[in-house]
Length: 367
Image (cartoon, rainbow, N blue to C red; front, side):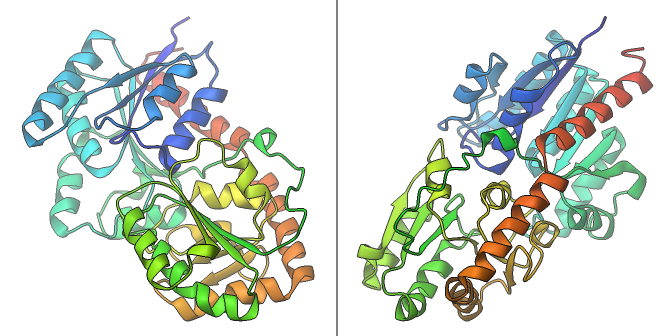
């Protein structure tokens, strides 16, 4: 029996939502049906090391400057051809464009384009590039319905080339023992620290929250370019004693077990893995109404949705949850049930493996 050779290709090596989902795919994939490779272009993170721990083959097509850009995609094309890769699944805009060209040159049978965020930064030029290389793409997989709508309306991708598969979480990963014995309010945000995620909004909301709950504490988890800037903002507002700022944390379960409210004050999003993890832990969520977040968080049912870039709405929503512990508990229970019903790793894996196998059958790779 022919095993399908699949390459997941990502841009970076730091672990965020996309990388977490790839690692969970490796944990659950049917190894009788698939041989999985994972590649990246930028070094420095823990992603590929985690891939190796799962006994999958990892490969770095190293890019450190503009000159390496072309040579990296040449190496990719050679890798695809040498290893006879059947399916390449691409993540990120430039990875998609360059990866499609490399796969076409290598005569890789199946090219899949992943749509995992809104890409609000895109200009008409980027949409044009997407359409220019569209002919080589067999399927677009978006993790949220708004992503599909954006592909159709903004980028003019044919609807019949797009499917939606939500992210899923492994419920066996959840540690159900609550650790927050003292019940002091702990508000947390777990996300890469960059200009899109907007940890600064939570920092600016903190003084108003502390007026009502002076014993509240805050934790920011995630590495990134704005981390130092966020630490300086915390200091300038005199909030150092109330904030914990961590970089990347490999196992966030202990942190989640101690949270009272989970916050994601982002400007641009797909279907955040961090919100799924918080919901699985029964934590009420306060998040921006952007991307696919409303597909996860039901306003006033599993959490509260707020306008992006609005410090006042953010602080008011967090205070509302802290002031109403019965409502907060009800939201947390509803969040857990929603994840169990709609967002499990088994659902995600079943859909992905079905699509991979169906495309392989169409191309005559398997019977």
